Length: 421
Ligand code: HEM
Image (cartoon, rainbow, N blue to C red; front, side, top):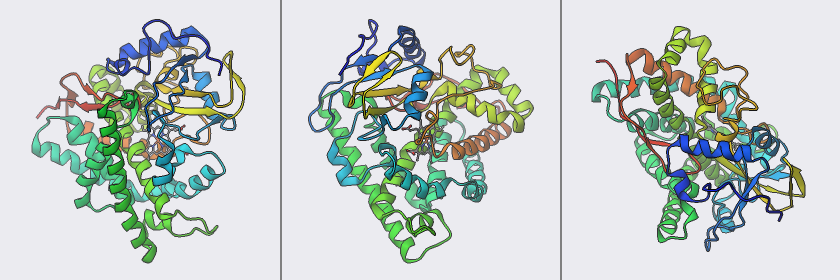
C-alpha cells in the first residue's frame, strides 16, 4: 500500500474525540484536509473479531468523492461500505445489505427493491405520510413542546417506514427500540477495543435478529396471501421472475430502518435549528413554499450532510488526486467535506435555500449506489415542514442541540423547542 502523506497535525478522524466536538470544528478540520491536497492516510486499530484495521485514505474533495462513487468498477462497495467494517461472518449470518454489494448482485437487488420507491408507490403513501405528519403535530399541540427529536422527528420517520412495510402500529415502539440498539454501534464507537464496543456489537446483533424475525413472519404471510402492499410486491415474483428471499427481505428492512430512519429524522432536527438561526431563510421559504421547498431541501441536506461517510475498497491499482492507490486499499468518502468544497460551492458555509445549481453529494455521489430513498425523503421533508410551519406559528429551537456521538450519522439526539401558543 502506498501510504501517502500523514494528516496535518491534530487531525485524527479515527479518534472518537474528533467526533465529540461541535460540527463546525470538524468542518474546519475537513477544510484543512481539503487544502492539504492528496488524500491523507489514517491508520485504524485492529479489534479482534470486529474489524480488519487496514486503515484508509480520506476523500474530502468533491471531485474525489464523485469519482469514487461513479467509478464502481475500481471503487468497490465490497466487502463493506460502512465503517467500522463488519466482520466477514456477519454477512454469512444475516445476509449482505445492498450497500455492501457490487454489480451484478447489487443491480439485481436494486431492480427488485426499486419497486418500493417508484413514483407510483410514493404517490400511494403520500396521503398516509400527510396523515402521520398531522397526527404528530396534533400530539405536540396536546402535550406541549418539549423535545423536537422524540416528539416529532423520530416518530415521524419511523411511522413512515413502518407504514411502507405494513408494520402494525402497536409493534412500532418495539421497532424503534431495536433500531436505536442497531445504530448505537455504527460509527467510530467501534474504534476502541473496549468491553463497551463488544457490548454494543452484541446489542446490535440481537436487534438485527429481532427485526429479521419480525419481517420474516410478515414476508411469509404475504407470500401465502399477497395483498396490495410493498412487502407482497417484494416477496412475490415480478414478470421477470425476480423476488426477494425471506432473508433478503430482512436485510432490506434493516437497511430501510437504518438508512431511512436516522437520515430524514436528523435533517428535520437540523432543519429546525437552521431555520431558527436563519429566520430570513425561513421567511423566504414560506413566502412561496411550493416553489422554494425543493431547492430548500437540497440546500438543507448539503449543509447538514446527514450521512457523514461511506467506504470503498479498490479493486485494482488506480491513481486519484495524485495518489497512486493499490488494489485492496480502502478509501472513506466524507460527504460533509465534499459538500463544503469551495471549488464547487460559492460561499459554502452559508445556508442559501435558493442556491442553484446545487450538485451536493449528500445522497451519495452519482453512481450505482445513489440513495434509493432520496425522493421519499424529499416528499417527507416537504410534507412535515409545511405541517409544522403552518400549524405551529413561531416554531423555533430554544437551546443548543445535543449531538449524537457518531462518525456515520450527523445526528441530533435532543432539541428543545417551542412555538407561540
Ligand atoms: C436526507 C435523507 C437521506 C440521506 C442524506 C441519505 C443518504 C444516502 C447515501 C449517502 C447513500 C449512498 C451509499 C453509498 O454510496 O454507498 C444512500 C443509499 C441508500 N439509501 Fe439513503 N439517504 C436518505 C434517505 C433515505 C431514505 C428515506 C431511505 C429509505 C427509506 C433510504 C434508503 C437508501 C438505500 C436503500 C440506499 C442503498 C442504495 C444502494 O446501495 O443501491 N435513504 N443514502
